[in-house]
Length: 614
Image 1 (cartoon, helix red, strand yellow):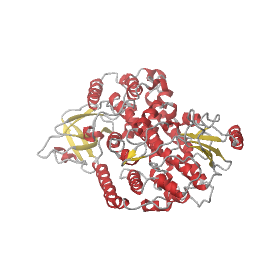
Image 2: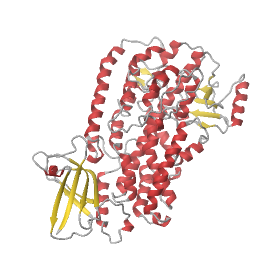
Image 3: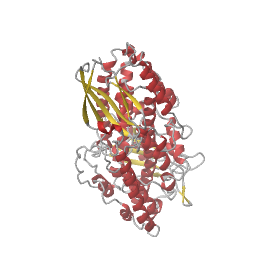
């Protein structure tokens, strides 16, 4: 007689259990005697019988102990079992196709990939953008890619709370007016973070303005200058500025943030009122003490046949200089949300997820390495396409680049996606930030990249003993081509590989995928509430055209910033996106920032990658 001990484990999420026949297996151990030794266990078949009430069941895994199992054999599932569905679960040890010398799993791999290619189809959202999963709503997604019930409930209740608060307080905003900048505290969240409070206190300071290019919500734009930008036209009388810029350039301490991607973008019209978009250029100098300070701001590129655009300097009247910086912060909001966060974070992760599910069977070692990092990617992206950047979505309602401008920006940014820009050592080297100690983002990104890369290398070494092993893995090569040629619309001309020729190349590509879905997305997502809770520091729209003179009053700044209703909606959505979530793992708080005076750099160790919510 052979005795097998079977343990079936149900997911711990809300409604993961079922009242169907599988109920008797929930977290119990069954002992079964069979008349024969079954030999090595390769596969478990699992069936849920449909009852009077058909409940889906989420099975985490099955373990089996008995003759031939060499201890405990684990059969991972992590999948919903529906209707009268029968699913096959191979033993959990990863296996390349060429290591299956007896072709024991050949048919299973082929059937799994054939099924996945029917279920996970490439879709299309907007022309010229990298491809999403097919499906218009979250209900079109496979059950395994939708939110678990606890996540779904948290999302629905949190959104309902936001809408309720906005409906009550937002109605009053129609009759309320902002008379001074401090009036924006009416929409400043009560449950603010410590950093949000510091931003509100210090948002006018040049040091904090420069610091955000290094470690703020969007640390992806700043680069060290190799020459003075051609668009920076200095009119007569600014010879001293020319000398200062050239001095900083020679010393290697001149940096720039160029928003040219926004040039020519059609601005939104909100409630019959024209909004405005600019494409600024900011030149900054890195001080020996680590502070990054602005030297000059140009709000618009020069136009042929027009006078040189107005340049704003720290020595200008305070309100003129503050308005110029506010225009930059609004432009940064646009590129952060669309280019750095949505495109390079969410949409890129979706390409990797869909390509992986279409190309790699669950037995493949690279599939096992990647799949934990795709959780909820597809549903959150569909919700974003249907509610944030859709027609009559949040961008159309309150953001200056809504009503089509945001799509234009995404298309322009897509054309500029390069492989090097997704690998921190290359990206930071190209932007001249490797040796900038004040760039906490750079330090954290390099550390995380190193950790991820070392982990991937050790895992790859277990399954690929030589470069030839990589080259001869047909599933791996298909996956690489699926990412680059299909999902990224043929991005090989921008450095993305279409084949993998070595273990080093494989490790780098896998590390890029993991870093993009984890640390890189965190760097642009988790800091939103910190940096945007105080509306003047990151206005979603500007309601007046950029200034044509330096005769600026506080009233001019207020009239340019979002109205109270727009500000409240921006704050509510930001708070909703930055909320504490039930699946979030909290790390230790890095500590409060010390007090800082005018012109000083906050010395607390903070980057979005170090966010205490991460």
